[in-house]
Amino acid sequence: TYEAALSAGAKVYICGERGYGKAIIHGANHATRDIIVMVDGDNTYDLSTLKQLVAQASAGNVVVGCRFHSKPQGMDLIGFFGNWLISRILNIVWGIRVVDSQSGLKVFPRKLVSSFRQGDMTFSSEVLLRAKQFGIPISEVKIGDYRSRVKGSKSKLRRLPDGFSILRFILKERLTKPRSA
Image (cartoon, rainbow, N blue to C red; front, side):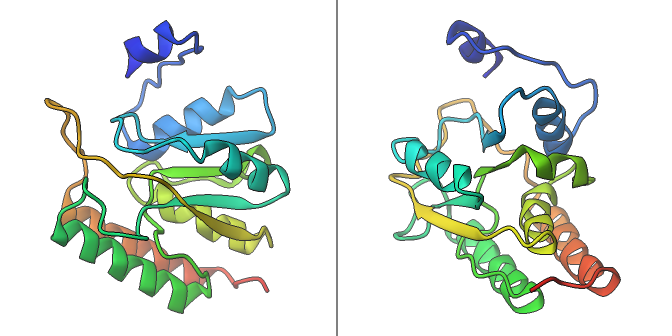
């Protein structure tokens, strides 16, 4: 990912701390534009709808690239069910209406970055919770294919520990912070 970003002309900032959320927050803190595009660097996401996502985010939304309009190639049944379950719980507990809450493709306003605190896999849910708390509309755009990982690429997601951590975060945040309209 690092070499590919450099060769494409991107500025690359090295985060000295480990963690999915920490890396995204670190990069977002260096951003110079008003819209942040977050996408996993494993080439699983089809970015053909990126302009549509950015346009909706430019209108003031947090936008999720939804993989679930069909069974995603790059996700096995356990991952599919776990994401579905977390998304349903998030919808019920927070009143957020999303199908694919754990998508690694999100576009959001830079003003949200200062509210982020989660340095781990809970970050994907935090983006949605903070949007809800600040009254920022959340929308989803169906993306093209969600592809299988490239050979040699491995997910850092630890299914059960991270899944329980995400659920704990969603419930704890709900108990400690009121949800906005």
